Length: 246
Length: 317
Image (cartoon, rainbow over all chains, first blue to last red; front, side, top):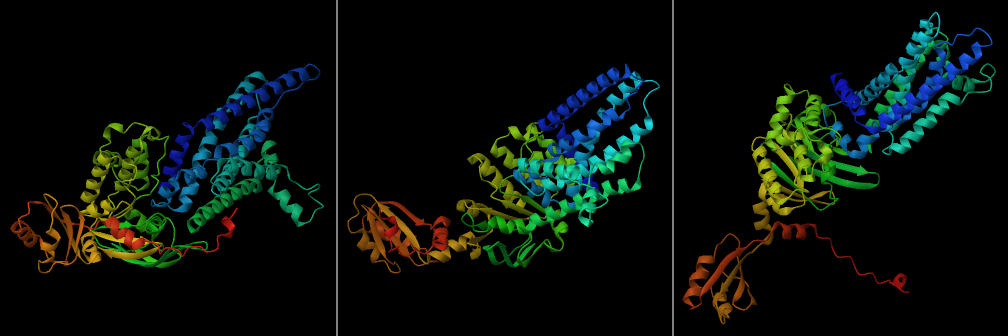
């Protein structure tokens, strides 16, 4: 367990040296700011016709979309970089268990994403000053809880994919495709389909987020994100173990 | 300390090492010699728990490399061929990270100690990315000394170093090797000759020969050669030396110089010297010619020449 923390700590620190992380964080914040601005502008225009108070959802909703794209960029170098540089040999011959390595890598990236999420609190705070009688804090909290859970599973998927390939670009593309599949693919109707479409519906990333978005916490959604996280980390561990046998 | 039995590793259809059996004792420096692609790195990777063998067993410090991999890894210091470093970390941070992973108490002190051993204290706060190859090699060496391992496995430790650094690293390895087991691979034969207590020559995944460097030299040549050089053109020197009892073939290869074959284990140099002087020659030089490990190596790993290709129709225009 201690090893997990040691690896995570190094990983986390590395994000603050690596230019990729800064570029990604920069664009994330810029785009989020732009979405926030245009949502406010629309709200002002709308409120001239009828009473309208924008909710905190105007920030959370674009954030969900943006995070789907941010994740592959943040996790693409996670394990693949170690393999490319040959430092994997160092880690795999140190007294560290394979799962400790994978979980450590995940934890480091996850903590970095949490830091990024923490910075986005500026927007709700600003909004709180702009609207009367302030924003709905319930939705804010459940919305962010949902985001944290979603980020955990996204990062886990990213780490898993990066354990499969040595090339960062390949990792980036495949993670992106995977995320898009989880995000967009859903059967035309979730009620009439057979088992296949039920599974697809169950795996949809956004459907499980809707309850958090509306201010309620459904245990099944929490379980969903946690299971995706553990499954991806398990697969990542298996993949690292498989590398030894090649 | 290292016991290897029947070790075999396949990469797909290619057999990298085949049925290797050897051991290394405590306080011994074992040299692993072989041309590129002979299976040196593969063997080392198995011994360090990086990957499992296809067949056979290996025990390091009494632990099985497959079943007790973590115990083995705790006791082994490993310097891979491409030194695994993080270029965006400082030397100190990197070593501290590795020390933490190995749960070393007073990690920072220990990092200072190993930096002292490899003479890198003044570079502790520099980024690894800015260091030259030789300095990186030293950091790699520092890294594998951190936990004072019982067994050191070094894959080509002097590659890419300048002559002064090579000497330094060799001295360092000899120093370390007094208390620990060192397995080092190299294709520089004089290096093996200088550092190793025992040499293991491997070619195409199989052990060709295993012996001390000295015995290898003596055993393989069968005869010893002495070179004699005198002033002038040395007329009649060949005849004179041939007359000495015990002397084998005498070859005159240069004016005033001959090479004399003498039976192994018998030093005929004093006799030759006396006879040459008595015969009226001015002796300039008299020395044993050592067959270098280079020659032995080439002899052992030489491939049989392939039969000439008679069907050369493809090469015809």
